[in-house]
Amino acid sequence: MNGFTGPVGLNQHLVRSIVAVRQRGGVALPNGDRVVPDPIPVGCVADKVSALARQYGIERSAANLAAALKNPNDTMFFDAAMIQMHADLVSQAIEVGKHIYRQKPIADTLDKAVVVDFRN
Image 1 (cartoon, rainbow, N blue to C red):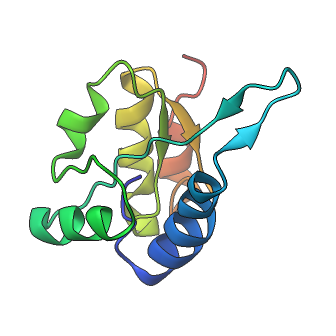
Image 2: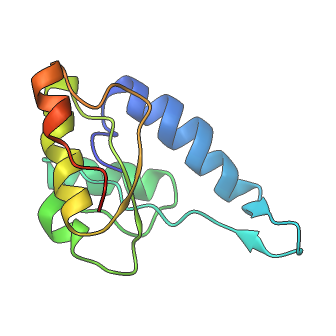
């Protein structure tokens, strides 16, 4: 979860979504299994990111997105950073084979959006 320290990323996506799902024991699948999100909050200020993660019972956090993206066990990338950064950040995640979850535009201009290659 990149960019979660802003108001929307923190309140809407982390607290009201991920933390709430974790507190309910995850999401029940049709076969009875449960999927519990194991997020890695990522932000540029390590102390702030780790303090927020601990506050919400999340064990992992990171201040280096490139390093966090390298973990092959983490398969999805969620980005709530500034729109101007989206195309570059999503491209980085695609390059290392992550699934992408977006709730905002992929880029702030058409030229940047067209460059992002989703075929991989």
